[in-house]
Each structure stands twice: as structure tokens, then as C-alpha cells.
Image (cartoon, rainbow, N blue to C red; front, top):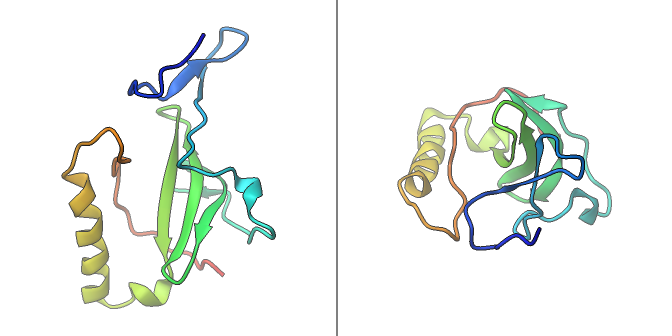
Length: 121
């Protein structure tokens, strides 16, 4: 089966006809691309963390799997000091609201906003 990259479906049946598996997504690099990946939590809420796909001054972006909805997701988690004050946390929420209000085939969707309590380091 050849998948059309323009179709919204993000899963393909596995080779044995079982549950669907995620399509490769070029916008989510493989977790092996980091030379020395930092440690990460096993899960964040209901999401099973598979690895880290980005890191920087803002925080980390995790590649995770939503077992309930059977899909791959990216989870953006800022460094604690960037959201420790209520005004800072509100700015981050505003950042999440902007793309959540958009619907475009070349943009990811914001599926959830939820404060988490753990250290990234």
C-alpha cells in the first residue's frame, strides 16, 4: 500500500493486519538523531515518552505515544524557571492557544495543555 502524504490519516495497518502503526513523519526526527540523549520520564500524563526530539533554551520536546488514541504526539515542556511565575505560565498558555485556533494541513494540532510537575534536568 502506498500512502498519500497529503491525506490526513496518520496511521497505516501493521504488516500482520493488526492495530495501526504510526506513519513516519519527517517533521518528527527519529530519537536516535541526538548524539547523547538526555534522560527522560517514562510517561507524561497518559502519554508514553519514546524519546527527546528537540531541546534548547526554552525546554524539551518529547516524542510520545498516546496509547488511548493510538497516535504519536510531540510534547513541549518548558524549563521550570520559565513558567514559575503566574504571568510566565499565562504567556505559555497564550502560546498554546494561538496554534490551537488554527486548522492547516501543514501544521500540527494542539491536542492538550496541561501543567506538569517534574524537573527536565
